[in-house]
Amino acid sequence: MVKLDLLAILVPALPLLGALFIGFGRRKLKGNSAGMLGTALVLGAFICSLILFLGRDGQTHIVHVFDWIKVGTMDIPFAFQIDALSLWMMLIVTGIGSLIHLYSIGYMHDDPRVATFFAQLNLFTFSMLLLVMGANFLITFIGWEGVGLCSYLLIGFWYTTPEFNYAGRKAFVMNRIGDVGMVLAMTLMFYTFGTLNYVDIMDQAGSFAPSNPLIITATLLLFLGATGKSAQLPLLTWLPDAMAGPTPVSALIHAATMVTAGIFLVVRSSVLFELAPYTQDVILWIGVATALFGATVGLFQNDIKKVLAYSTVSQLGYMFAALGVGAYSAGMFHVTTHAFFKALLFLAAGSVIHALGGEQDIRKMGGLKKTTKTTYITFLIATLAIAGIPPLSGFFSKDGILASTFQDSPFAYGILVFAAMLTAFYMFRVLFLTFFGSYRGTAHPHESPKVMTVPLMVLAVLSAIGGALNIPHIFGGHEWLKVDLGTAVEGVLGEHMALSASTEWMLMALSTALVLLTIWYTWTLFGKKTTLDGEPADMPFLKRLIAKRWMLDELYAVLFEKPFGWLSRNLFGIGETKVAVPLTVGSGKAAHGVAEWLRKMQTGNTSFYLFGMMLGVVVFLLITLFTA
Image 1 (tube, rainbow, N blue to C red):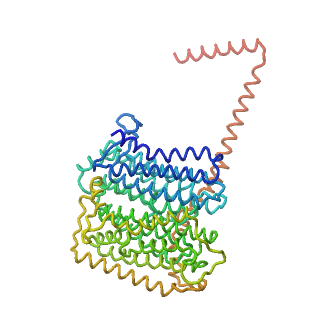
Image 2: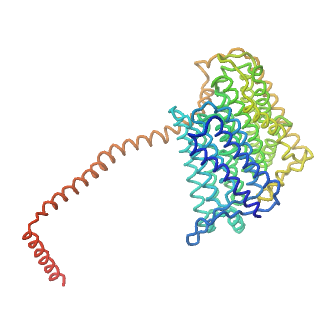
Image 3: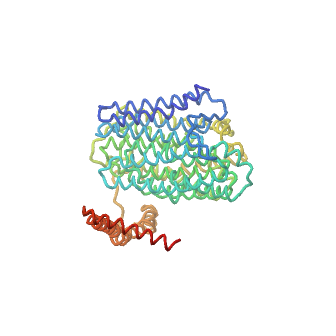
C-alpha cells in the first residue's frame, strides 16, 4: 500500500517538479537541456503509471495526500482515486505526453523561449494528471482550471502576434463559460449529497429515482462544463483557433489530453448520467450535431492544422454520441485510439510544416512522399486509422460507436455514417494534396530529424495495432478494455449489445464500403493534382457558408461580442467618466477641504482651546438635559 501511495503521488509530482525547476531556472538552461529534463520527468511519470497499471487488483484505492478543507460538515481531502479509469487516462496523458515532449525538442530547438515552453508543457501535464486522478470533484476542478490556464499560455505562446493572443483569450473565455456549469454542478451536488467525493456520491446516487430533477439539473450542468473543455456545440469555436500555438501544443490539446477532459468527466460520473435519460438524449444529439458540423467544415479548409482541428471536433462528437447511448467503454476506446492517430496526424503535420519552413497551406504542397518518406508513411497510417479502415485501430473503436448508436437510434447512426464518409474525404484530400502529385511550393523540402520522426514511428505502430485493446466478440476477442473499465465505471457493466452478429457484420460492411468508395472518389479529384486553381469568385452559397464555419463566429459576434463591447464602452463613458471619476475626485477634494478647515482650527492659542473645551461641556450638558 505504501508503494502504491508513493507511486501515485510521484505521477503528478514529477511534471510539477519539472515545471518549477525549468520555470525558475530557464535563464540558466542551455541548448536542449530544458527539453530533455522535461521529457525525462514526464517519461518517469509514465513509468510510475505503468507500474501502477500492471500491479492493479481491480479495486478502487484512495490515496490520501493530506487533509485540505474542513469547515463544518464540509470535509474535502486532497486525495487521488486510483482505479481502472484513472490509470488508463494516466497512461494516455503521460505516454502520449512524453512522445510529444520528445518531438518538441526537435521542433522548438531554435525558439529563444524554449525553456519557458517546456515549463508550461510540464505544468499542463501536471494539471491534466490532477484532473484525471482527483478523488473528488474539487481536485478534478483544480486540474480542470489548470489545463485551461496552461492552454491559454501555450496557445498564445508566440505572444508578439496579436491574432495568437486573441486565440488564447478566446479559448480561455469560452472555457470559463463551461466552467460556470461545473461550479454550479459541484454546488448542487454538495447541497444534495453533502460531499464532493466521487465514491460517496456514486454510492448515494443509487437511492435516487431515475429522472430526479436534482440529478437532471446536476448532469446538465456537468455536461455544460464538458462542452467547453471538449469543444461541443455551441462552445466549440475556440478549438480551431487554438492552432495558433506551436504544433506540439496542438497535438497535446487536441489528441490525448485537454479535449478528452469532458469525456472523462461524464464517464467518471456515469452513475449520475444513467439516472438522467433526458440528459443522455441531449448528449447524444449534441454529439451527433457536433460530429456533422466538424466534418462539414473540414471539407473546405486549406490550412493543414485547421483540417485536423475540425477533425478533432468531429471525433469528439462521436465520443459524446457514444456516451449519450450509454456506451461508455466504446467512448473511452475511441478516446484511446484517437489519442494515437490524432497525435500522429498533428505531429506528422508539424513535420511537414518543419520540412517546408513553416508553410501550412496544403495548396502550396504536393509530391512530398518522395522527400519526406517517414512522415508520409506515418501520416498515411494515421489517415487510414481515422477513416476507419480495417484492421487499424480507428476501425474497431468507430465501429463500436456506430453499432451502439444504431441500436439506440438508426437516424443518429445514419448521420454518423455520413460524417464518417466526410471524414474520409477531407483527410484523404489532405493526404493527396500534401504527398501526391507535383510539388507546388517554393521551399526545399527535407525530412525531419530523428528526434521528431521516432515519436511518429511509435505512434504509427500504436495507431495500427491499438484496436487489439478491445477486439469485439464477433472477431473472437473478449473486449478487454471494456472488462477492465467495468471494474471502475458502473455504467459499463450495464452495456449490452442487443444486435445480432449478422447485423453487426452488415453495419461494418456498409460503413467500410461507403468509406472506401469515398476514398476512391477523393483520389479521382485530388490524387494527381499538379496545379490548384483559386477559389472561384462565384462560389456556391452553401460552400461559402460551410467554408466560413457556418458563420458561427460571426453569429457569436453579433449576439455577444458586439453587444458586450457596446455595453462596455457606454458603461465606461457614463459610469466611469461621469459617475465614478467625479465621485472619486470629489471625495478626495471634500476630504482635503475638511482637513484644511480643521487645520486652521489648530491655532496654538490656549484661550481658544479653553473656549472650545467649555463649549463642548455646555453642548454635552444640553444634550443630557433634553434627553433625560
